[in-house]
Structure formats: C-alpha cells, structure tokens
Amino acid sequence: MQRQSSIGRVFLRAAVAPDLPQIVEMLRGAGLIVAGVEDHLGAFLVAADGERVIGSAGLEVYGDVALLRSVAVDGDWDSARQSGRRSIPASPRRKNSATSAARRRWS
Image (cartoon, rainbow, N blue to C red; front, side, top):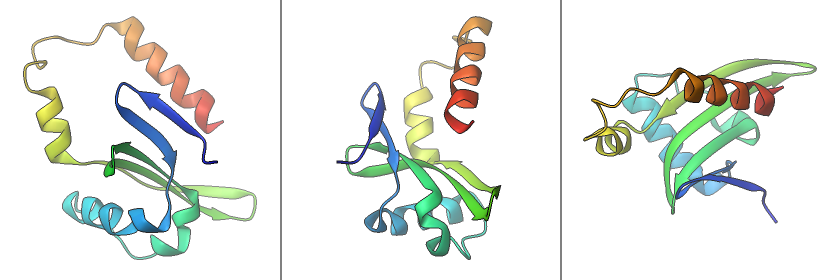
C-alpha cells in the first residue's frame, strides 16, 4: 500500500508512472526543463487533488547525494485556490510550522 499524507483534500504521495504526463505538462507550463524526469520519477513526490496532479517535487539522486531537480505547482489550481484569500496573510507562526514540517519531511 502506498503511503499518503493529506492536507485537506490534497494528498501527498510518491509519483507513479501514470503521473508522468501530468508532471511533464506542469513542469513545461512552469518553464522548467523536463529532460530526465522519467529517469528520476522514483524520487518524485506529487500533490494530488483526486486523480489530478497539482504539484510535484523531484530529486535527482546520485549515490549518497541528491540534487533538488524541480518543484512546481499547477498555476490554474493554485490561482483558483487562492482567489478570495489574497487579502488574508499567513501568520508567521503558520509559516514557521510549514517550514519546520518541510524540513522534517526532507531530512
């Protein structure tokens, strides 16, 4: 069984082969390089809203070191989600919690 974490209705999980076309499309939309994504797909995480991949983060792993390859969020999803929230700034405490959580997850 694949391990997943959720944030609301968005699930974070390891990328799988059927996610590749959506990841490539999202990276191209963000102006990022897509060469090599398929070779490193096993080191990608995706954020999924149902079957739709709305974000990805990928590493290129070389032995015991890794390069953060790319991080992208689907611009259409992010814009729709943020409409109506633009005037509500995130509290410093919330930002620090998110940063700490991200550091723990990638450590």
